[in-house]
Length: 315
Image (cartoon, rainbow, N blue to C red):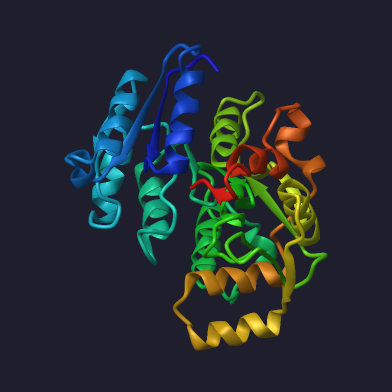
């Protein structure tokens, strides 16, 4: 890929920073490629020490900091902002609320951006379908429909499964070290695909620069695909003790969601417990086919679960 290419990443959270670092690394060896990141003006003015450190890193990587507000700006205003870029990669997550993903997609198309990577770094929404417990997923399908219905802008969707760290997030409840418990969502034989944010950043950059060029395709990646039984076995082996195991059935999780219908965590639990579209074989993934090394669940656990002076989960 030798032609001039300007890339805009939307957002610089955990995933955005990982994508930006890897794009900058690749861009350094590819003539004519520039990388920019869109950040809210209020974020750019932040005095938070961690934020200022991120900004210094981005500038050191020769990444341009572009002010913009995805939630507040109109479609037309965003389109004007996007127009000078060849590739837009959305790393915003769902924090903007309902409608923002569709607004971004409309603005990208209006701007005539050559290639778009929407915020779809997660499960297989096509398999899950409409009307799932997580209502935000319907908008993901709306975005796919919008992109598939046109042929002016190329699109690439990167399906990653769950972030590996989220599987061990105490609030999610699958691995609860404080209670010495592991819970299976739906069944112990249900599987989940997980990938670390760092690996998603690396793999996204590889997909951006892949030859032959990848376009109008859902690309699957994975750090690991494991059953909840394998998760529990691995936790037991690593901690050297038996955790309590409990299966959270779909009916139970749906009842809990009915009692707290606005809870995103309860919505996610139901979707993962139902088991459709949340896992795929590692063998079929982009990283496996390209021979790219990624972090397995067990490796992540070794790096983040500490056994000295008890056990703690590093966030």
